[in-house]
Structures are given as structure tokens and as C-alpha cells.
Length: 384
Image (cartoon, rainbow, N blue to C red; front, side, top):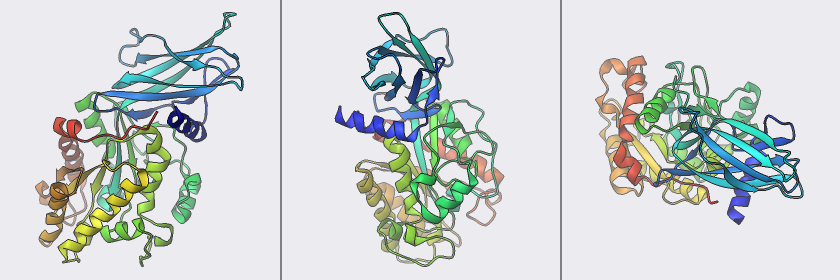
């Protein structure tokens, strides 16, 4: 229960309350449109917390499938309202996309009601890498599927301050947005890119909602990721190693968001910018360094990494060998897409994607996350 209390306190700090039907019943968790990672069993544990004016009242909740609103689940006990007006608990639910209805019951019959419009039990992913993961001017249409979500970057001033400082206070709170067109995913996404389309494929394939974070940084190499993970300075024209960019993006994502939502895997598109380095062993060490640091920082040694593969031109085969070695030799790494399958017209320079390449990339990434992956990749679920 101590772990549950820590997580719920974190959620209340991160998520602004959602007002229910009565002004005396405030729900801080779960935040709207947030997906919680399901476990290997297919279930997710949803933390529920808030404030209610009915002292010593009993708070109950039920999940109502969005696709079948006429078939709500049973009312389940969350917990009693304490003397300070707070309530907290947790509920288990199978993978799906729900509305969460809450009621606070008192012996006098003065019930209160509240509702979180959307909450999911599904899949959570964090994107890392260079520009082919980060995105640029090219953006495919976002997801049409309502189950595809992110935490959106909307405050340009806050984003500018975050780029200068990497401080958590400048990242948006844990409140979800539909990952539709022109939405930038936190903490550092450049645009919608193809990740909304990718997530839509996964939502369809797995029949669960999906939450995407983008922690990539264009123009970075594995050497930059390894050095920043270890706090080692390096020179770069626009990447600030003194604030531990680019690694700090994944660190902040894990600490601010994933500590609450859980995560299935990190999706890594890296190595192509390391083509000048002919020492294969060094590239391999750099890849492993930032992963080991992320697992240590997050306290989850089984954190899954999905490794993309691509041979940079002109035929820099040492990079492809490193990517294949990571999948084969490094623990809890899984095969991602193979960009060497792309045709000439799918990239502008042998690396960066054209529109046709982005469309294929979305499908390739989704195809890589097959049923075997979901059986083997152990997800992180926050302790309750």
C-alpha cells in the first residue's frame, strides 16, 4: 500500500482535477485520455484518487466500454472518503477503452457523481532516436481512431524553456490528447510525423488504446546518447550536453509520465548518424550504455527496447551489424522494422523518409510488434 500511496500522490500533483457533475466531487486520477499499460495477463491497474465533500462516504466506480455504452461494468469499491476529504484506491480492468463513472454514496442518500470521459488499459510506448524518429517538416495525418493518444505539446513558451533547461516544470501535465493531425507529442516531438499512424495500426491489431511519447532528438548519434546518459560533456552546434540532452528526454519521460502510466517498450531508431565511426565495438558499447543507464535510472532492468535497423549509405554495414547484435546479444532487446526494405523513392537521401517512406515506416513498426513480441516483452506496471 505504501507504493500505491506514492504513485497516487504523484498523479495528484501531475494531473489537474477533472470536474464531475457535482462541484463537490473532484477526480484527479485517472487523468482524461490517459492509457495505463496492461500486463502480460491483459489487465491494467487504474489508480483512482480525488476529493469529495461527503466525509466518510464510500466512493465506487465502474468502467463503461466506449464501444458498448449500454453494457457498463459492475460498481466496484474505490475507498472511503477520509477526514481531509480525499479518496484513493485502484481498480483492475481488462484491456479496452472506457468511460469511468464514479459515485460517492453517503448514508443520508446525498450521492455525488463524476465522470472521466476516456481512460484506457492498453499499450504505452516511448520513441527515441535521431531525426528519423524525431520528425521534421513531413507529417502524415494523425490518427482517426479515438483510442490513439499522446500528451500534447501546446505551450510554445514552455517548450522553449524546456529546450534551454530540460526542467520537468516546463513539460505538460499528464493529461491526454487525441493524437490527431498537427499534434506534437511530449516531451520533445517535432510533429505528428508517422507515429499517430503507427499507433493506429497497433490499436487496430491489438484492439486496445495506445499512448505515445516522443523523446527523440534530431541530429544526435549514439555517442551523444551514451555521453549524455553518463553526464559526459560533448561539443554540438545545437544539442546542449550540459543539461544532459538528448538522454534527459527519455529520463524525464520515464520519471514524469511512465512512472504513472507504465510502459511496454522504448522504440529506438538509432545508429544511422554514427556512420563515420568505423569501430563497431565502440558503436555497440554506446548503444548499450544509454539503455543500461535508462534501466538503472528507472529501476526496471527488463525495460524492453525495440531496435530499428538500417544500413546508412554508402553501405556502412558496421551500423547494421551493431543493430543486429543489440537484438541478438543485449538482454530484452527486440527486432524492430528493417528500413533496408525501403525503396529509393522512400527516402530523400538514403536515410530520411519521404511521404511514401513514412507510410511504410508506420506499418513496418506496427508489424514488428507482433503477437510474439507482446508475449515476450515484459511491460513495466507501476507498483500499487
